[in-house]
Image 1: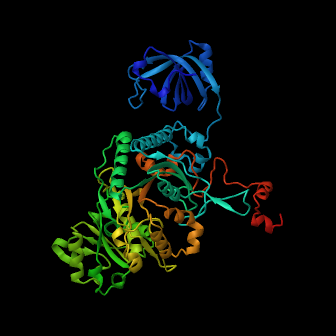
Image 2: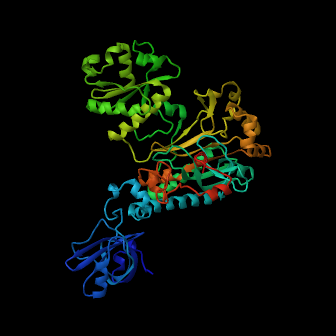
Image 3: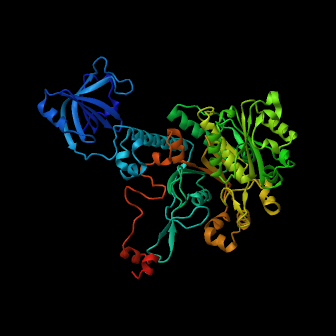
Length: 596
């Protein structure tokens, strides 16, 4: 029906007759001459229609926003003074010689010719097919398609096989809740939608596939936020006979290629590596944003002996932590701004936010410090704080003191917030690897060990004995790729020996019976010559979100769910009728109790 896309026309097409199809982005009537900005997937172009062709002009008068048109015309240069340098087609226009209205449109609930900021997300998701017509949304999905193509091409070149794994599988409850699917042919039994292809990709290594990848759909019934969805896409990868260093190098090169080809950006080579313990100590996070130059400074040894319980208590508690966070030129902050930051850290469980304004330390010593807590600190403690933080006149020092988990979360979040609020970010892209994760974290509420990554992560070979003697000190062979404070990929070398896997299950309080019931097929496969193997999974939605500057992964998905895991477009989830339930052998409790 067309000879060209709207957005591909340029000065090289001047004099040519073209046929275009698209939507009316904007229509303007200027004293008898009608201008239509015609839009399709590739962009938009200005079409000029004059009254000399009466029938064509009459149809143009009928056209309104989002009408679907077919236009025939001749490409010509725009008159002098009307060139639009902000538009790829801004040097030319199409003089319309024919126009056909292919379909009319009701007045759209989203104005696509203006900025969509005024439209609520509810309206955008309810009319997603309209929202997706917006150029910025189409550009994000184009970028996603390109990223996926480059990832596939790289892995194909490296000898990986693209292999699909089942969507209907066995429920193995670990971490997030499963989405369950009732079986009609096996009444009372259920499939689960996969939270990831983890076990299947390990089985593929045991099958001798050697190198596997898949752009996989995953499903997790968990509380949602800006970078979480109940269904999402990950690039899933597994290899045999490869060390973690070799695998990490391979994955680095893949991500560097994506950024170079899509954004024309060179990422560091190699990516820096940071041990988990150091990341938590310096940044309070295992996914630190290295663009923020601020760091947490430990003060526990300085505060253990002070007569100030707010600091001394956590300093003397093995599970506690006391830190300082120096903000250069932070003395400019008003009391109102400090109060807002105090409320902010409260979101993460902090009971308050102590601070010291360094007004004139160089000349007046402690008299040049402004804070309600200075009177509670000894000269030695203050001298130690100032020396350790390197604070200068005009700076502000924030303090966190509580359980280490609370301090890390609250002060780590404050560090990032201050970096953004105060314009301190250094560089555009700061990738890194976080390595040397603990195998386990202690679940104090249930008095048990929990896997920091997942139960199939291998311990470091030289620390196998710690599984028996000191599990809390055992490090894993796990690794996370982090970009600008977001984890974009996580993986590990896997356990490939049945005896070690059973030992880990036992530490995780998974009984022999439970292990056989949930993972019996994996344990059996481990006994038939499983090779050493490992892998990684990249969050494709999150990666594209970062690359496009979108605020949420919902903006890089064609048809996302709301934060309550609902689809406003299709009104899902929705009730099903009694006949369907009966066929599945199910009865809803609420209906049964009502006698229905």
